[in-house]
Length: 363
Image (cartoon, rainbow, N blue to C red; front, side, top):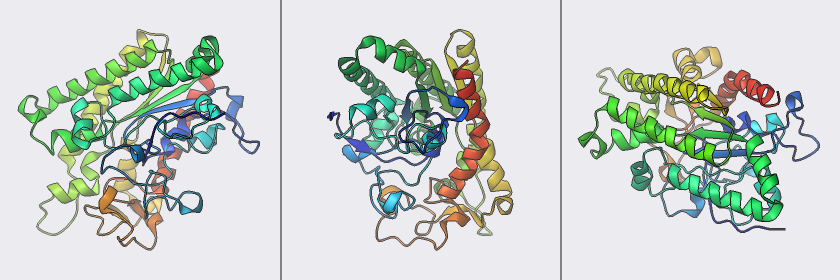
């Protein structure tokens, strides 16, 4: 039985998904702790998008080489590397979380989880408008549509149970600050950075509440990375006379401040509800790698593997762009997104959180 549900898009941090997936797609996949999470549902930006932008009129795509080199047969799917979404394999659900807009989704695909994320998106509705992608708010509407499809196929009772036991993953926010607030004048006309953080957090809160109202009870939310260390940010903001490419610590401190506020808000929301909310920290492990690259086997942590590594990302990193000989020695594949080697380290850092989610969810 085949379902037609729309389009598709690129994803860049797919390892985070491995974090919350748990349904056996084939015999060789085993469930740690015999967990019983039936599906994973993903929302956010390129850090977890698995291909929805393939079906959207936007330049924020990665469904062409050299992206996709870490996938089976090296076929680009819309993700830059095999990122957070691979957590599904670890948890025992399936090896790939398909984009909701893929018109060829089966009922099994829907029942085991799909991805609603869209590269270039953010919690601020303006962020998606600037990029021509799917806003987080629209992703919630797609989720409601998804629920209706399940109810029509398996009934309301089974759908309610599936949703209540499913793991929800949200990863967004970087585009709001880097591409929206600092790269355009619109929000800065109304907000200083502190009030803009509060503005974003209010949208995060509304989004989580929206998921809860639809039956979500296990939600994981990823914090911001050290944004001042993204190669493209270093390129745009660096004015080092000695030619050194150093992180913009003031921008990274903004991300750190936002993460602290986010954690406090999530704790308050957790205390006021029976829903389980987890915060996933990627700031510290990424910062550790940047501060001590040789300890983790990296030679380059301030530029990407694609092209010059200074500005290339999405369509600027394309089939005609030269790629470094050994991406595993680079922290970043393009000027924004980590390499598969980097994601492997990040996944190991998040592994305790993944295990805790699995264990507590089945109590």
